[in-house]
Length: 111
Image (cartoon, rainbow, N blue to C red; front, side, top):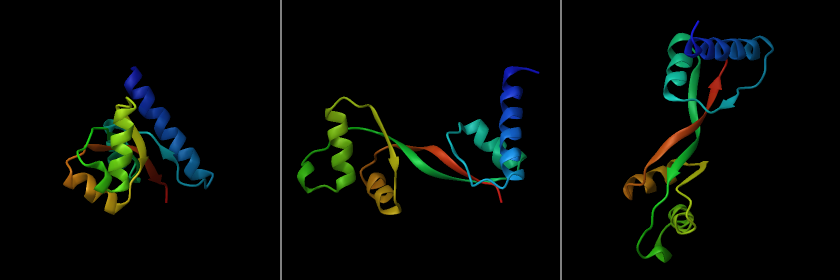
């Protein structure tokens, strides 16, 4: 068994053990491959909760929304990426200003 299969098997055993013990839904960092494995092979549903946002600067920051101010000032401090929860309104604002964000952590629904 190679390393990749071992990691997937370990992930499967951890999730099935949590399901057997009736634990709450875990919030884990998953890569794309693990996410597909959990959804397609194991049949659990995942939803992104925390997002990784690429920082950049903006013009006329005083009149922008608070999420854009946070991104702008993080960029000024030298932070290349910031991680936080996003609401639907914040996602729309980021899409309007073409700011890149990707899912960072997922909630895995065991039931």
